[in-house]
Image 1 (cartoon, one colour):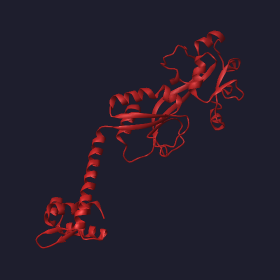
Image 2 (cartoon, rainbow, N blue to C red):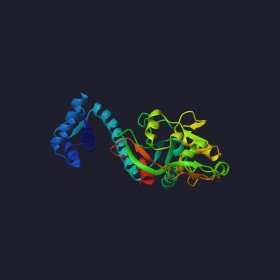
Image 3 (cartoon, rainbow, N blue to C red):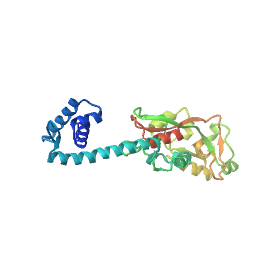
Image 4 (cartoon, one colour):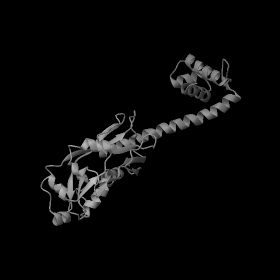
Length: 288
């Protein structure tokens, strides 16, 4: 049983003739007859009584026809709505992002997206946990590179650098270190890292920033930024967490020529043959 067979059956019923139905569909009469016969074989019943002059619809044929019309109408409506959706993004877009990226860099893209497309909505899933996009029905995730899952499609979202920052108040009270060795005399707010990540950063950042036993440490840049803003010490922060932010901490870059680590954030999504219009529209705005 195929959709083509059903469409032929409906046309024959509506025109009352195999000849007229075949003509409307642009197929040979023999093909139309064969398709209806195949449909009857699949259903195990006679749908049409054929005579030399006319076609009579059986009781089973009338019942099946009513269902076929409803089904074809629903399919046509679905096709029409999909066609409209290709030009107008709509629906809810679920985006997963870690706390710091959601707070400092994602809002502008979401604002522009909502302003451009009034029929869309955005649901942010803010978590530092690495989510399973398919299992958790996430359309798009924002992650800091390098990326480990090569099966996902990635588009670069932002490029920044990570460096040492202190508040103006902290510098006024304690002075600014002029060498890496001088960091040992300062209060350092260290980044809590897993063993694998710590090993990757060894030789890239001063060991004093990664050493165990720190008085203050955190595994989240937003938390480190908050403590740096309060004048509690010097912390390692991505530049996007301090640039153009509406506070009065007066962040100062410390040892910029000694500590500068490039950082990239990517928008990732599962591979798919056709991008949903709502997803394509967001990517065009956020990562053109």
